[in-house]
Length: 511
Image: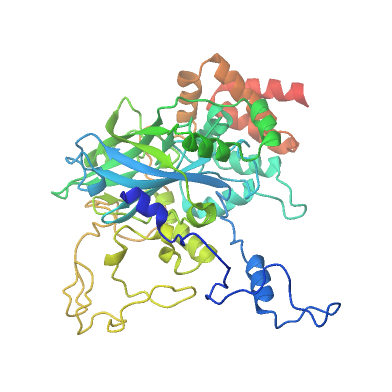
């Protein structure tokens, strides 16, 4: 059995045969008739199976994710075809390595039952089951994001969700937040363009979006960005087509991916990276850790790494897609974080959301267990739903007099503290200052929030794409207040004067 098949099979019960049992193994007399006090009497509380069946049914749903609640996914393998060992020692990225993996696609703002085709940024999150543990890349179908500082993330998501007074989504608060947060302009330009309505999950690119670090065997670091290029080609809906499909089939993306894999039409993405020498980060024209910015591919071209293929559907949607806990703090040797503040905030927030959603022991669930689960050696124990436990002779503290060790930098005998870089997170030998501060990013030469979306509009989009962009923006403005309307015009004029004028003209014709 391949490693990818082993991942899919983890936690699966053998096929049921014969009479049913309760979860604790006792035989069930009837799945159809409850116990009553006489033929016409009330149901009794002593009907253990009735109570257990109803009580479990009432608890089948776990809390949905706050963003990225609506999603779907599949499993497959990552194939490395190029030699990138010069840049990273990570085992999964060594040439000719094949690593089992899964991908979860999602929307950001909608709830569990919302349509897949609403205009939105689409999550593109990957997990690789490596011999060094799980490695997760939690990205989107855009190379940027709305924010550069994680402290604003709850405000952003609140603005995209629903008003407290009526439970409805509200264009005015969306645009009020965006126009008062100018760093959002680059991402909103992507969102209101064709990428906001991909036709299917298969026909879109993915991005790690953040800046990450790779480190080679000699300890030399570089900064990198991940790009996942679909071999299926780009296909998008127009605003009208996306709205029409939302009414016809709310699960269109989910159904399309599942059916394609069932029919043997396995989608493939090429894996590429941009690589920035460590020293370049200091003086690059844009701050390279700012998630609202991209790196020019003219400055840092794409390097081929390999490809991944999705060729296995989940065996059980709830167990393997709803309960998968993707988390950017899942790192492996040779890969690190960066001074990207959104990435650092997410490294805490994603794991914490899973602790809330599915419990402190969520990593014990089969889909979240690493391939090397038999080598997990942790001092974590107990807590709600702990179904794995440490050996009875293991100590529950460190340092200790037993053979259960400590970290690889510890001496294993005392609590003597290691002294040196935290290279498991990222190598940064010359950071800006050593004091804790609250300060904005260090501005580089061209660090203006509207320069890159202006370049995207003027130099990348053709005339038809520009017109669709303006049309999509004005469609999304329906219901906004006069004050926010003026803010929107100023916002898009700052991106490009012609775009601002066209948005004003079009919206006037639609009012």
